[in-house]
Image (tube, rainbow, N blue to C red; front, side):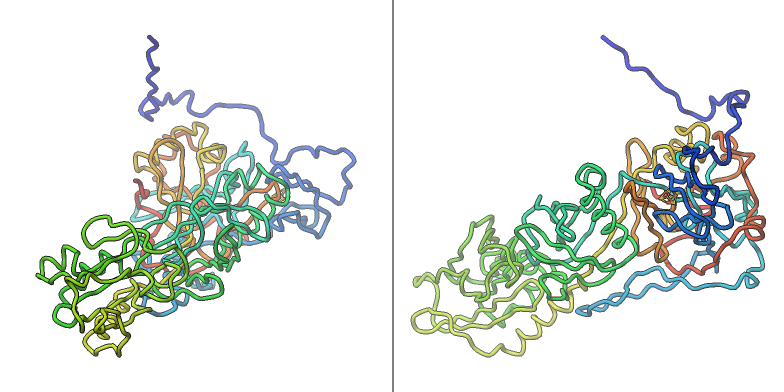
Length: 534
Ligand code: SF4
């Protein structure tokens, strides 16, 4: 039997004499690969493309350029100014039924440099910081500052991510397409429909196989789509065998040309449970149409608890448990995420031994957007009648309880590879220091959720990041900011590049930068906080 090797990655085992190796001298700029490169060009080595850039021009990704023979990062590095102890700001609360405009969006505003009295109120983000691919040298910014009188270090880079994707949650009951269906952007497959969640359809977009595993065009389209989505732009997608979509972070999704308004209050069964008491006495039967579970009041446990008598209603579909029916219709863009436009299509009839002429029945969708009232005639056929006021109020109450429909866009990426070498000579200590809450991880200042298990798999809501945080390189891969913040002592102990540490004051004085105020009440100031672990 083979015994597993026990590996101790504890920093306590760190031997000071070997923690910082005296290795070869690393050239700041490598010799150009082509001896024939024109003298007015510089070679960019910030990604494997190795662009040779002519004076006054930029490289293929427009991030680096040749300025008088020097390789420069075109955009200034973004510094964030802290405004108070909590980290700031205003978050608009959704209004039921409204098409939301820029909800929960981190907002930014430029700040004059002379408005900053204490550089310790600044945080260096990865946005515009540059890359030191393949991280054979320290990260572009390793910056010391003080937080609550404690010496801190923030290590900042623009990560180049091939292993990355966007998980998109679309609050809608409408049928977007079968699970596992391909999703296309400008004709190319860029993702798939994944498992639906409560009240929402889920998409998985991008990822390494679409970026690099298919044709060049597929990779390019995937990269374009991902960058646009990350930068909070609207993206048009089509689902094979399903809907045409327009998706934009924080905005209402548009499904087949119709802007979605409301997220359902719950499934049909949940709606019966929520509203049963409010219907009591005003109607004899209620059917809540839902693609997942259609609810029937008189049979449902909530109806039984109110002693509502049977109505003899016979439903189509497959009975799950009392008052709960699956598959009453096909999925679609009609009532309750089904394909029906006439709600009577899901009712087979009424048992004449039980039902009676004049029986009152409300049929509603799970959002209250569709609702009709019927009474049975002498032949026990439902006849449409004007909705009584008391029932109209309950339908409006369903609508009031629906949250606005939004598209939420989360960036998911693996940072457990070579970029760790820009932080420390011992990458596993960075990984372990995050898992033991010594190192906070943020993306453009926004808190990044760290997945459990191995590696540094981060997930961040793009709405909490400043605008235009994402870039690309034509390998193709996505460029995204990432920051690791920790105490200076811990940085030294985990084998950090201590010689490369600069003060925040030095960055402000010497580096081209832009200072922004960054508003998001749910994002704590990155320094002095623990990482968001599982
Ligand atoms: S594509 Fe790569 S090599 Fe070319 S400029 Fe951009 S980062 Fe530099």
